Amino acid sequence: MQVFLIYAACAFASGFALRLVDPIVLPVAGHFAVSATTAAMLNTAYALPYALAQPFLGPIGDRFGKQRCVQVCIAGLALALAAGAFADSFAFLLATRVLAGIFAGGLIPLVLAGLGDSYAMSERQVALGRMLFAIISGQMLGSVVSGFANVAFGWRSALFIAFGVGAVAAIVAWTQMPATPRRGDSGPPASFTALYGRVFANPKAAWLFAAVTFEGALFYGLFPFMGELLLATTAPGGNAISIEAGIVLGAFGIGGLLYATSVRTLLRRLGVRRMCLLGSAAAAACYAALAVAPLWWLNAVAMLGAGLAFYMLHNSMQTEATELAPSARGSAVALFACGFFVGQGLSPLLFGGLLHALGPQVSLVIVAAAIVILGRVVVLRIVDRPRATAVVVG
Image (cartoon, rainbow, N blue to C red; front, side):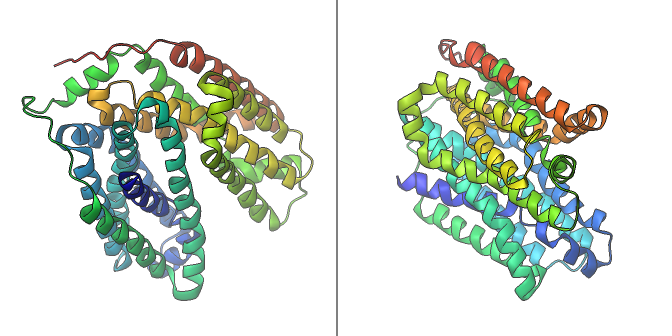
């Protein structure tokens, strides 16, 4: 339990920093006399390094110890946030977001892989589900706290608060993390090639990484277009549409929190296989409902259901990622996370093309059908497939 709470503090800090800049884009743009579009690049400067660092930091964790790497990453994140709060130019602020993204990107895969080391497979999905509570809560509170802090004290206060969250997590990680037991002399650390060779020696690996990439693309493509979807299906227009879109999207995260608090019950009653099938079917139904819901709050209800259903599928896949290669668990989970974020990065292009070519109703139905197919593929090619005996390469 001690290790879980330490990991949860670090995961919360990473999530808190992820959505921190969203509410302060305009104040930052005004302060540094840049356009809002330029200031919005602070999100890109964080998100891209966040995704691209993971395939490198995962193997580093496998080679030198996940717990030590978590300690370094959380300390680096806190320092990068502090530096951003004192930024005297937009270029410097942008650079601090790049550094923060690199360090934060290493935290989540290493935390999840660390849980894989700490929990047997029978309890692992519950532990991962509960860790989602810390991650999602951090993401939701990051935006909320940032917005209120900006109004009360200015945009720099949001970064100072984020630094405080990261600093507390870093102190906890460096002072309370139990020592990793030494496993004796096992030779020199494995190379990146050898570690990823162990991962892909498992026949599930290619299917799992492809599935999570498609999952990110299918589920998150509509997010940037929610305001447009609401205008097309529920509302005549007006300034309130941005508020309604924010509430509808926020409901997805609340659905994730509901999953995190009920994961043990869901597993006991459904099992992994039925949870994947039911989750994909329910998510598809919720996305299809968005095409016909006449009121914005019905869209919020649908997105809440979609969030719950998404994590039923996603956390099952995530648990499988922790067991692909126990001797290269950090590498496997890092590649899984990278695929997920790559899918999210591609999703606006894919859904936007569908939306503007076929309209919202047809686009949502196509996405819903694809989610059902994805759930079947996950069950047949991953969940139902026997776990291979660990293969050591290199």
